[in-house]
Image: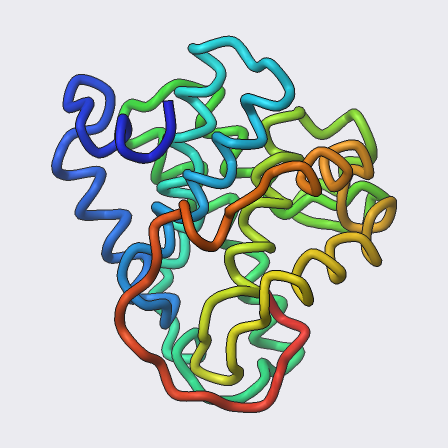
Length: 214
């Protein structure tokens, strides 16, 4: 299926949704095409887990719009060349719930809404907004957690340079069983040619010191 089908299949995602996805990249300080990269990686992993076509469709939609809540919030700190304050981090943790509400307003299925709500839940239960743990987190949301993190780490942000593919994969492995479902991290190791095949962001962003926010 992949991101090319997402962009071409107008009955599934119309121009309004794709424009919203592009706005999301801009609000977050990413170069153009970042959300499409997340959708590409998420679908590659979904294929590894034999998700049904309908579930892959829901995951692709959620991946393209996973941080839509940040568009609604539109906080300037997202584009600042510095780490976030504790207050800003707490504020930012509202975005999955706001995103769920935004997805509902777009009349997308409940499954898409919940993937967006739970894509920041951690395998060990310390994520947000609901503190779900392990397999309480739906598989699609666990896949999106890995895809979103990998794509974020390998993209330039306003406060730091992109990691290499190798370094990002090492980061995922180190956090398997803590932030990420270990089975998904293991499956991700077999997804090859990621940097070459996935859509690439095209606009340079200023480089600053690495931040643990992702």
